[in-house]
Image 1 (tube, helix red, strand yellow):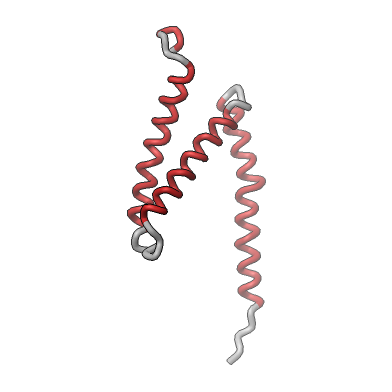
Image 2 (tube, helix red, strand yellow):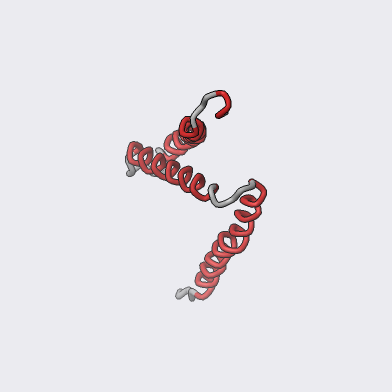
Length: 108
């Protein structure tokens, strides 16, 4: 794109707008769906929170992408991280909660 005269800043801004607008569709759906179960939470506050969260996730991913030179390396790194840290932590919490639930003695 630089050969055609596009600056690097404009290139990255176009990708940010593309990713952000796509994510905002999901955010709007989450807010609309969340009106019923979260009836005591303002939809405007949900929209602000989710919008800031999506923006921070996109910017975080852009920052992490500068570490890797190839996309396959980033994919393998992310998959390994998810496998070693993310899923095992969720499994640990679920097993711990189930164990705590089984330890409760019912008094009649």
